[in-house]
Image (cartoon, rainbow, N blue to C red; front, side, top):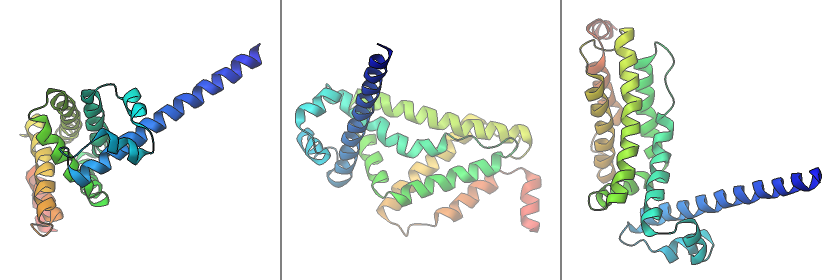
Length: 215
């Protein structure tokens, strides 16, 4: 009897893993199609075909169009936000912010579709409550992660003591979003790393700025 229960349990785990993989394949298919055609051209039959399943399978995993859209928002933002969830080491806030900027830059460089898809979702969120709620939650989590880095840096004396961590975090995240929007239209608009250096100088305390200038 114990052996039977073990086999059943193993089969259940396999089915769960298969379901997660199929769901992921459908979201990746949607992600690719949005990058190619935009949200207005997105069709559920095309998503199913790209993932190699029938349309009923898609409806099984995403019962409504709203549910599908929310899942796409979460899937896409996870591609970008996952790297930013990793906290910096203690007393290493300035390095952590630099790593955050570098990770952001790398995310967009490694996957050129990312900026396009995020822009499509942002536009959709302006008129779609479900997409808006999902994207708002992702932005909140991202801002809180950066705010934590700033707060650490202020306490450690590595960042300006007069910084408002909440406002500073939104400056950083808004810079990243704005930079990717501009560079998506014109890759030669500016050097991302040079602008990042300006942010470093803005965030650094006076002593740090003097030391950099001497260096």
